[in-house]
Length: 149
Image (cartoon, rainbow, N blue to C red; front, side, top):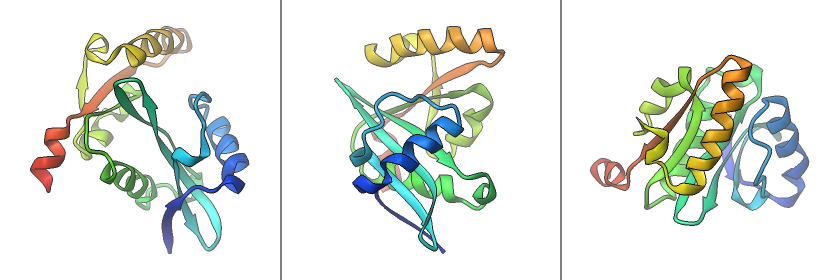
């Protein structure tokens, strides 16, 4: 049975390794921001909300391959979003847009994101195009949370 818990200092290495293994954004990996999905004492998934000036970003969502398709990622995302009272942004590969729609995220133009994410997205999108993938910027507005409460 998978449980979700707050990360502890001892989780730092597994967080960094999972982010590296999935080739995710390796910046701002502050363990206190993470939630951990655990199954029988093994870390099987991670995720965080990165705080930026004037905005927050869902990021570093990773689930070990053998646990994918069982709702682990969704459980992490729901637990992270349950704590949020304002708008939350994310960047993802374009093929993942429909996955994040189920959590209330909608695609926006890159220039509609707050400045810290706008600049980050310019860099990531440029690199992504060179490597053959497209990025999307999304937001879940705080009003969406109110409508679901």
